[in-house]
Image (cartoon, rainbow, N blue to C red; front, side, top):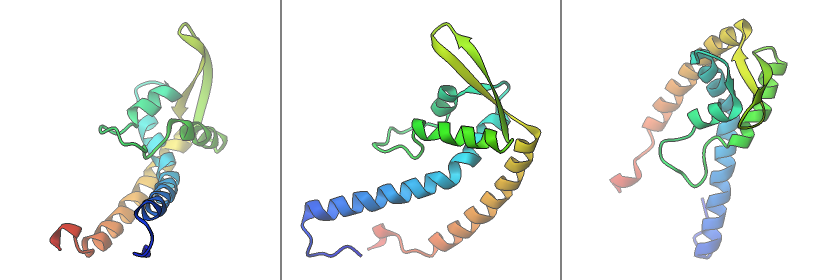
Length: 137
């Protein structure tokens, strides 16, 4: 609970910091699953910026759930674990692009992780369903 004796600006700063930390932790847990999902459903290999654009929210939030720059380390990690493969191709619109494609091992991981996500999501939805709605006050 935030101390009510704190000034409005200090309270907002604490809430903003807590929100940012929560978003970062949440994002870290779902980015790999989201990337595997995008590439699992893609008809052809995709480069990082294409993937990032697909993963943007419809509504422009001031702080996106998944930042573009955060995708690249995760893509490299997934590749390092054999879940993705990549190739670099020249681009007429700028520097060479690295195209990513999901591997068979990546498709297996995606299926397992989806099951884990479904179970986790169901549990969290059940728990959050018991939290009183702020609007009911």
